[in-house]
Length: 250
Image (cartoon, rainbow, N blue to C red):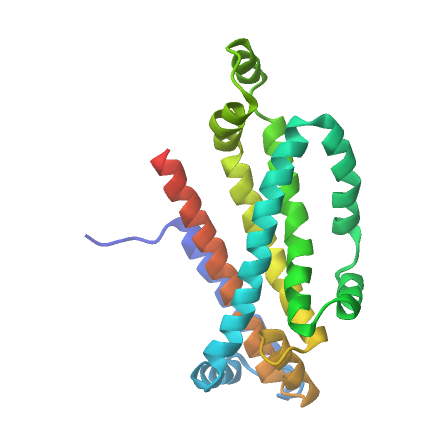
C-alpha cells in the first residue's frame, strides 16, 4: 500500500522549502557568515553541536527546566482554574493577578528574578510565570462553557462538589487543558531560553547561544535557535498525541 501525503502536508513542505530558498538567496546577497550564513553552513553547525561532548547535557538541562516549570504551571493552573471557574468570588480575585502576569514584560520578570533567585532557578521561574496564565485562563474558560443543563441536573440529583468536578467539569475541560498546554509550551520554551541567555547558568541552550553571539558565531546562534524550535515542536506534537489518545480512550 502506497501512502500518499495529504494536501496540508504537501503545502507545509512547500512553505518550509520556500523559507529555505529565501534564506539561501539572502545569504548569497550578503555573502558573509558574520551576517547570515547559508542553510548548508548552518546544517553543518547543527551536526557539529549534536555530535559535541556536552550536547545532551546542555539540551537535557534546558528541557528539564522547561518540564519543571510546565509541571508546576499545570498543577496550579488546573487547580486554581477549576476553583475560579466554579467560584465567582475567587475568579474576581484571581483575574487581575492573571492579567498582571500576562501583561508584564518578560524582561522585567527576568531582571527581578535575577535579584530574587539563584541563577539556575531563574529560567524555571520565568517559564512558570509565562505558562501558568495560559493554562489557568483556558481552564476557567472551559469551566464556564460547561453545559448549564448538566450543571442544573447535577444539583437536582444533589451530587456533591467533588463528584461534580470529577465527573462533569474535568471531562469537559480536557480539550481546554490541552489547548492551553500546547500554547503554554510554545511560549514557555522561548521564555526559558531568554532566561538562560540573561542569567547565564553553566549549562543551557540560552547560555551557549549568548556565548556564540559574543564571539560572533552567527551560524551557531542560528543552529541553537533551530534546535530550540525542534524541541518546542516535538513537545507540541507529543501533547497533541496524548490528547488524541485520551479522547480516543474516553
